[in-house]
Image (cartoon, rainbow, N blue to C red):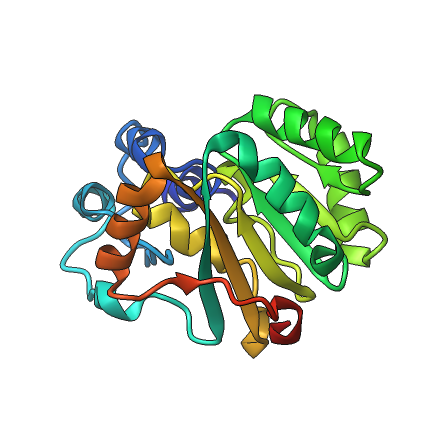
Length: 234
């Protein structure tokens, strides 16, 4: 089947995020009139809804209320680390819990993926890492190892928040909180797949307190402080 403007639009939106994805959609030609188009996403920002008018005629919209978006079965917690420098020690303290199951650790930059990977390996903690600066073949190998279970802890960025679909993942750690509340759902949704239980842990510094407040308000949820028996929750 030849790709249409609609399938190209879906690919553009799925592989990119935020304003970059919307810009891709704006530059695609309008599809033929006799075609059925469907747009699906866990989150649908207003600018994306607006641009779909180019590809759809009188569409039926089925939208979940924002306060119903947060995923059932995923327990959400925060750890007050106060300072950025304390995050690494906190992560190392949690490492034995991470290794119980498969875990994904999110940071906000590619450089930080490399930095954190080096720091963890320097302390004899086994981790894998992937980000957009790696070539596709390398990323594919890393993801195959992670899906097979031979790799149990993966450090990555938002670029892959929508593309990691591993049934065994039950723990997500936001080493850095996302810069946009919408990305929080995509991150924590990597755990608790297919009805399984999941846990999301957020490292929160003084500078992050506003973002945590915004996330709770955005999804109408309460993120509680991490209890000492976190291993029992997995």
